[in-house]
Length: 173
Picture (tube, rainbow, N blue to C red):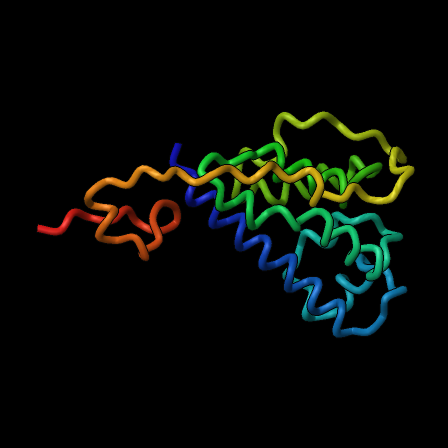
């Protein structure tokens, strides 16, 4: 399956998440409610996904939850096989646990660009969040050993990046 455009959209979304974190951190108001700031501050107006957050979530809590929710995305987005469930479930568990309405709004926002995002995940129960956010760093998949077989064409291009998102090397004539 050619999912490079979906990967690109998810990377752009991750960039928006980092932009939101940066803007909120620069405000120096860790106890402020994110949704209220998103409504008032010009720098946050275009970051529509912030409106899906629980209305009582503070900047400090958002920072903690977002870090857990998105820390595995760069690695997952560079894997050969895209683990769609892992991408969505880390966000669901860490950012929207116990908030099914917010999760539904967030999924709807992301699905404007990536149609499959969040499909197939079990629904979360309202008010279910009882413990601190899940640490996604421990749930990451183990590192696989690299394939050591090298074709004659690849031997000439060892230092070039190969595979997604870089084009495959072409044989030299």
